[in-house]
Image (cartoon, rainbow, N blue to C red):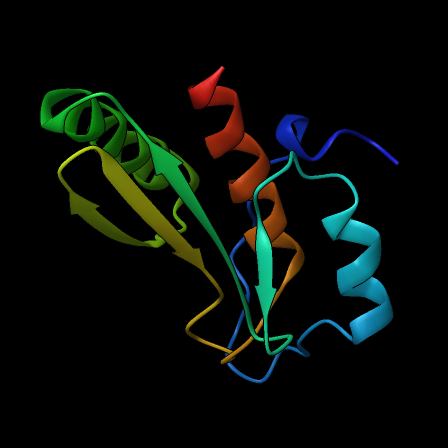
Length: 110
């Protein structure tokens, strides 16, 4: 399978099918450590930083990436911590785009 980080998010329409549990497992294996699948409906990861400024800088980089990809995660910023939640709001569940964005977010971290 092509690296998820090398793919581009593509717009999906209302009514597009969400990923089945077996498809979720396949994509999940391609992500770096730390991601969790929540109820087969979203993925989530907590990133830790030494202070608020580092967490904010990371948040801004994720925001820029989200705009470039046209796919926007929920981002929870607090002192030394950023929690990212990703799912496709339009279809109410997981799509390949969510895993692409997650893989690209992990590239920011490294």
